[in-house]
Amino acid sequence: MSDAAHSLGRAHHFETAEQQYESATLGMWAFIVQEILFFGGLFGGYTVYRNLYIDAFTAGSHQLDIFWGGLNTAVLIGSSLTMALAVRCAQKGERNSIINWIVATIILGFAFLGVKYIEYSHKWHDNLVPGSSFEWNNPDYLHVAGGQVKIFFSFYFVMTGMHALHMIIGVGIMLWMIVKVRRREINEHYFTPIEISGLYWHFVDIVWIFLFPLLYLIGRHH
Amino acid sequence: MSDHHIVPLKIYFLIFSALLIGTVITVAVAFVDMGFLNTPVALIIALVKASLVILYFMHVKYSHKLVGLFAFAGFFWLIIMLAMTMQDYYTRGWEEPVPIEFLSE
View 1 (cartoon, rainbow over the protein chains, first blue to last red):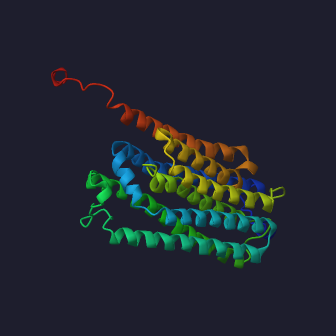
View 2 (cartoon, rainbow over the protein chains, first blue to last red):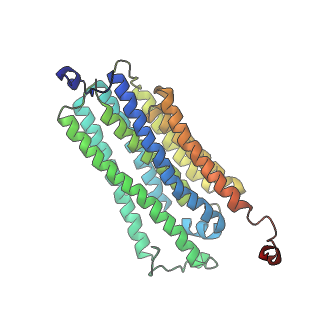
View 3 (cartoon, rainbow over the protein chains, first blue to last red):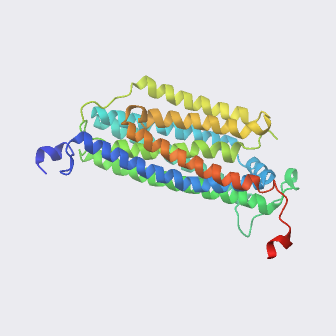
């Protein structure tokens, strides 16, 4: 690889930088497609059990706090905006602005995880974490079998937990991107790492866009 | 990397606002009793929001057609999986169980 090619960030097995960019984008999308199927399995399980135990899932969703869930939705949408702005600055080669927007994205990511911690600890204190200490004694929903509500909360914790894990990994990727920008490996000719990290971040946002109504809002009209 | 489309700031803020408004709408309609339509309406709003993120934040609108095909294929296969699973579970209660004597031989 010649020095000139290296400065443009093009590996020797690609004809042009454009070809390399499109390959990287497509590769990231292939990863995202398998992520859709990964979360799809969880959504599929959720759909089956929700239709089997509609009352229990309604009762379970009433235990979740729309305020915290809605706030986290807004936080995540905001983080998607700051991420998109980071990519935009990368396209223009504005190094300092890239870092600022990525830091904003990380802060919003931590805000999301902080809210998740608050919600999880509430559930813990209310004995709603599936396990031996699980107790179902909500006076409004005593006709609903506790075991079925337990299934709702199993889905709640696994789905939001896997989502939160993706957020934590996303924060790690963002820190890595800051290092790359500081090492001057990113410029207006080569910003692929920022772009495809952004794809990942936005995908995690999309998962939450479906999780929020399905977990927090179903059955609110009852 | 000559002609990468730099999306105008205005569009990003427009999409951001649309996503926030979509969130408010989805919370508001969740409290309205629409019978069996509540879940479909919530899912349609989520689909619209997801499409905005995919098209604009993830640049699929400005990318190679192949990228759009990948994104579409991912969700299309997900819909096949959910539809095929539910056509089984949803219809299980529709028929009388087969009497046991017909199963024994």
